[in-house]
Length: 210
Image (cartoon, rainbow, N blue to C red; front, side, top):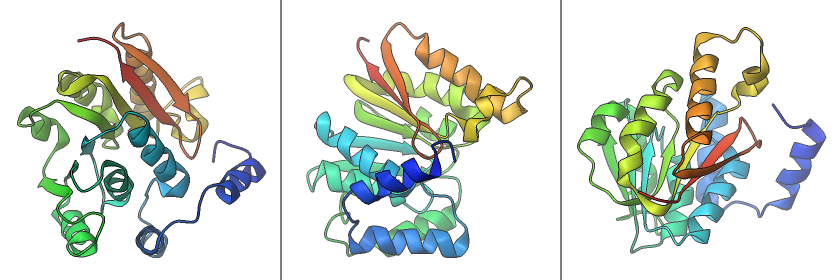
């Protein structure tokens, strides 16, 4: 936890209560100790998608679809959210949750495979690309994803503060990979970037030119 616990609890009290589907998925995550972004980040993703009027979202590393559901609520029935994940069983679980769901049915599409390979066959433009994959793949995935993002679109990434270990003098390999990625995007001349320190840190980068 990066934020003071009392501050984080206060933020949880402020956000609207989730719907039945998000609560069901959160309960699954707790029961199976499966890491999901949680309601604070989910609400933030929903807000960002609404602000820019997103209709096409690509997720790199979707787990069983928790964050994708928040995006699906934002893009609406005429939008599209493409989920990707290495584990086929996760995407089967997505289908179980969303096949008959009023919000997500027909909106969420599933792809199984390595994110870097998946990016090679994707066609843009996307309004939002959200990344939550192996941390040592972040920089390479960003380089592949950037051309697929429209100008005015958002590149977003989870876990960019690594539980605060980005400040360690001798970070481990994965934390160093995140530090290198953060430096890459913050120094990029075609992006305006910031980090929201909720949960484990969420990067938001606005693409300002091709």
